[in-house]
Length: 215
Image 1 (cartoon, rainbow, N blue to C red):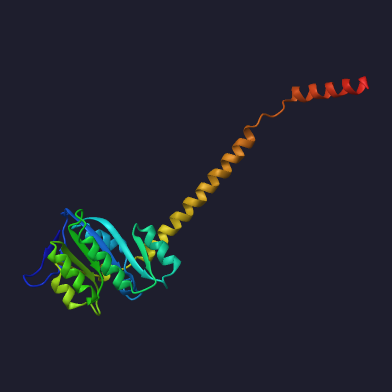
Image 2: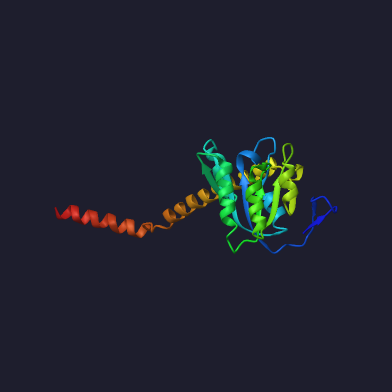
């Protein structure tokens, strides 16, 4: 899993052992999905899977979130939650409700914000483990200290733009290949239609001549 580096510090290095926790991941979109962090959620998921399985994954966004961002989040397997009000309030309320979910034993807060401190305290009182994923600057010391595990988002978590472009090219190639295959099938169907042989054409000519003579 994540090996502890010191007695008083909660920073971890990745190990190959997979955990058995059942986790809910709650992501503070306006706070963490920012250009300066350039976070790749797939890499965050990979890191968390060392602790166990993510059974709930939600990304909280405000009403100004672009359609492109919402679509990207959904494509990565997360549930976008759009709020017209305070995103922090909705996320904290959901986090508090998830405390009572018996199928979960760990709550993961991806945020730098100390506003979630009351919800985190309540979760720990109810026996839930807490993992906090955050980044500097502005990563609250209070939520780091109360968490059972802390993951800092650094360069290893950055979005690989070249990888994204490659995926885009592969997707476009796949679509193009499908269209080409469809066109080939149509052409094959046309070519497979029965054509008149020379004998049939000759018979048609004789038949037409006989009909003309009968007139």
